[in-house]
Image (cartoon, rainbow, N blue to C red; front, side):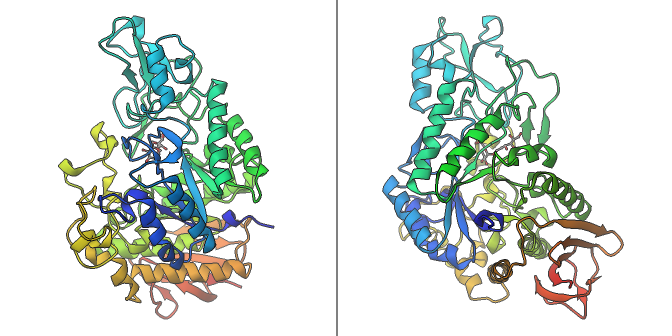
Length: 526
Ligand code: TEU
């Protein structure tokens, strides 16, 4: 028997930007409840909700001050229960985000730690250290934060008695937990049980490769690796002890019936991420090496084969994604304009044809482009701390064509949305695309439907393998699946000859055995 998540298509909802029911310009849980029929109409198996827990919103909710409550900005815990019930009534699974690497400076435990002073047991739940030689200016070590700038913040620059700094791998509003302290593990045991007991089907674990830091917090001797503006410090991530945490969490997930899904955001190369899906750890991790790629066929192919080699060794199928709230939208990454849109359509159809789970980010089904948000409107702390702005992938969804009421994102008379809606957004509106058989939304719905039929007819085995190949001459990328289906993507500038077989689905009409450029087809090859 395979588990539901092995072949599921999951829709990522970023609550701030999905639907605003109360007119404050920020999306909320009641907005999501109203749109559950829409999510269901996409043909997906479930929803992943990014953080809506209590938070001062320094990092749009990834700075959680109470892990077991809903932020008033998004609603109440009763709203959450209603959302869960409404989703389950339609057979949709619900995943919530858990952020175990760091918390918020407004977490009462952190506030208590600050108040208790240097050397206290309260401070031992975090990483407090005096500056180098007790210095006010020189932090305890040379680590930089993922967003930029030092990874340390002085507790109280005014105090002569308190020389401590605290560690924050992300913004200063997000102090890191000290996972060496068993009290932290106990606290999170309570957190995951709280959500499992409420009936959620699984959790997405933020920065799942974080948690532990190298012993003694030594200076970093290498320059951090910077990918898309994010700094990666090997001493601060991927420490071996983190695996013990997931062994414990896996046992907890399996106390429930049915067992709850553990999905890790492990932003590491496939061979390292693989360790997190050993049989007694997480069920899935995102295929990150793939998620950030541009329209680069040779790269797709080599990453695809590396992920396949890992799958064969470890057993867990990849979880495919090309977009999320941190990544530039595919339409733009793949070249922008009409061609970028065609490629984004080809790409999502390609993902839906692959074995493994598929994660789709809200708006991807509408072909939304990345937006260059005016500097004075940017809200992302990564931007404030010197990195790139991720706001352009977080613009509120356009539900209706009319400009009024923020394109239907908000009710009548609402405040302006938390990020400005760009001119022309109505072109992408759900109402408009629902009525157009040629739209990206209509294509997505058809592809998800055909995938679902193929899954139920047994054409997607959860332990299925695939071989990726790319022909530079023809521009054709082929993914040959064990179950006799081939995913073909024409990634070059000319049409490519299709492999022999029956076409099961294509992202655009085919001509005489030829796959036009920027098109994907699924072909039954036997
Ligand atoms: O992003 C995680 C993230 O930025 C890391 O995986 C990073 O790429 C890695 O540590 C570099 O080594 C998540 C959320 O998706 C994002 O929105 C948050 O800002 C971030 O965590 C902090 O909670």
